[in-house]
Image (cartoon, rainbow, N blue to C red; front, side, top):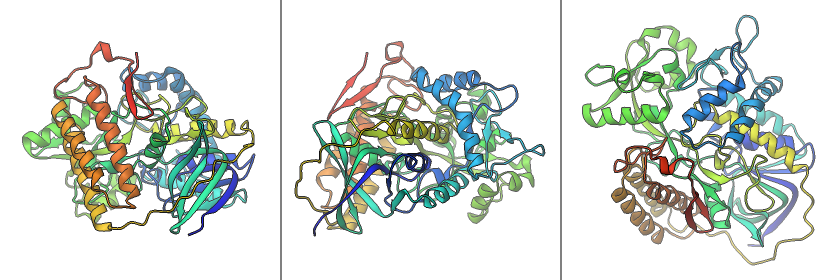
Amino acid sequence: MERRVVRCRYLVIGSGVAGLHTAWRASLSGDVVLLTKRSLFDSATAYAQGGIAAAIGAGDSPELHQRDTLAAGAAMCDRAAVDVLVHEGPARVRELRSAGVHFDLDPRGEFLLGKEAAHSERRIVHAHGDQTGAEVVRALVERVRATEQVRVLERTRALELIVDDGICFGVRASHAGAPLEIHADATVLATGGCGQVYRYTTNPAVATGDGIALAYRAGAELEDMEFVQFHPTALDTPETPLALISEAVRGEGAILINTLGERFMPARHPDAELAPRDVVAREVFREQQTTGGVRLDATALGAEFAQRFPGIFALCMARGVDPRVEPIPVTPAAHYAMGGIVTDLAGRSTLRRLYACGEVARTGVHGANRLASNSLLEGLVFAERVARDLETVSPLDAVPPAREWRVPPLTDRGAAQVAANLIRETMWKHAGIVRSADGLRTCLVTLDDIERRLPEGATEEANLVDTARLIARAALLREESRGGHYRADFPRSRRSWQHRHVLWRGTGALVTT
């Protein structure tokens, strides 16, 4: 089948908050192609319940927000990146309101602010209670669709970055099964995270680590892949992805109890249910192993639960749980990747003309453990920075070397699905909440075996394997416990590992000093 070539000023891959904002802002200085493998509404952003953190309340400040972010990041944050996040964040939130996002407001018309784990102040803005991400996506999609300078290609899979001599020229993709090359002056990866490498995850089906795998195979640097955040309270049901029970529920007073009806968090951490996510996730996991299960008791909220959390209330009721009168069964689940493509403060990767923003990027903001509700904020802040830098990119004065290629047909869909499920089970067992050297080595051997048996055309499963291997190999190298990375054989943080990162350069890993 003959390949088609599209030329544009800017190419943006991904349709979450980072991709949508980048595409719209970049369109002010040139034409944009926005590529997404499903629809514009399929992203982790649309699932985000908790809200957006920003220092906009009385008594709060960027300095306090920075302090909380650095503390959660366990000595692994890039202070300069955090400084950018907390100082530019309030303006980005106010711009969203101006763009038509219907945030929850108090009777005076000011932002109604909530509190979440490890925040010292009430600084979380919400929309429709617990549907912040969906409301943000709605407004950004409307803005993108109304922009003539943005061409949207839905149901288009990015297969390979076009790179020559360290310069990214665009992407090779599959559009309706046909080969498509998109050549651009600059390419932006905003493909989101990789939660689908795990058996239990809150991430949507599209979160298969595509951008991470594409960048890795193209030779871009990656870092901190071992730091995966597991949300402590996903609704414990036999489905994938799992519905999220937002941290905001605990912020409003809900408590965690075991199968004996005992509250256990106050004895484990001074902040109890509002301890950092990695701590709460491990303690919930421990209770599951020892007492058989954990529930989140929000019955003290009574009828107010349905008013404050209408989306979560509907999710629970649809699954036969009435949170007004009974505790909610919960389980930890893979939620967010702190690591990813190394970028500078303008979103530039180590390959020329390739940018990254949102969850796929490793800006240094999150360190070893993301502070609650900093993810949407990071997507907005650094998408804006990427868009501003794109204005300075000169037009390409060359074209990539031509070569023949085709879209590989998926020869055995059943085998591909079996492989995907095995990847998820293997990662959950050996590279999940609790890790060890023996388990991680078993994981890597199993992943290599899965890769050898992948059917032709299983491109998404190949991305899962590559991303899973990066996580497991980095976790094996980091011989300590820190943030979202916990080693049973090295259960404490080690000073010798503080401020050191596992950096992927080409196909090899090295530990920075």
